Length: 176
Image (cartoon, rainbow, N blue to C red; front, side, top):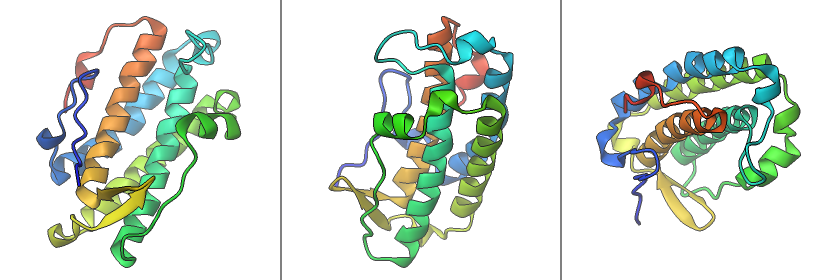
């Protein structure tokens, strides 16, 4: 089972993130996304820079949903043996959820709540349970992998938002 989640695009290194790091990083995403969603001009918030590139609002709504899905999947991993979990592809979720039509403040509030809930879930998991897995699209993903992946999703999509706006990467986004 290969669980590496390194990303050359954003510089994320999977083994650099501990469970404690994830528990600390997740709640910080709420304010960071809220800042983006409230300081971006409304016209730019929903603008897609290219046909295959999401708008800043779509990226934020995606992260909101990812945090909720991960919380559900980790919870199932703790009580079921290798549960198979389902979720639409990111593009299908964006279309079905009408991400670009959502209200930015509602997205920011829900993203923060989902990040806090996911951090609390991880905080309550003993180390001996970190190897427990769920299966998605034929791939086993451990609790620890999912914690790391959550941090990567949150951080990477902040970079995507800044790229969509043509903004330079912020120093506070290079923490992990």
